[in-house]
Length: 150
Image (spheres, rainbow, N blue to C red):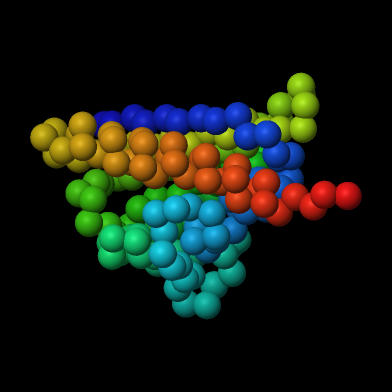
């Protein structure tokens, strides 16, 4: 079982970041790798059990299911149902925590999954860096763009 973890300090209020992150269909709004997304069967994007179907900019198709969504804990858990990455038993968690020194938040994105041993390093780079690290950075930038200046 492969375990991945990424984190970032985001200098934007947790409410603004959570508003972007909690939208299970909103990846194209903030993640640089995602081209489009739709929720299958006309389900609400915050309904546990809904399935998002999205494409990456390189044409890859991924289907993921929302397993948990907590506004109180600022936490989302989802699994991959289908992808071309060669992973199985993939479960990921995204979580935000309040930072008490300033007006920012602490973001965490982690996953566990199985894969062929010869693909582990490649997938660690792809998921750990290109998905998690770049995604967390972009999430903070996207949330900052929604900030209004008085």
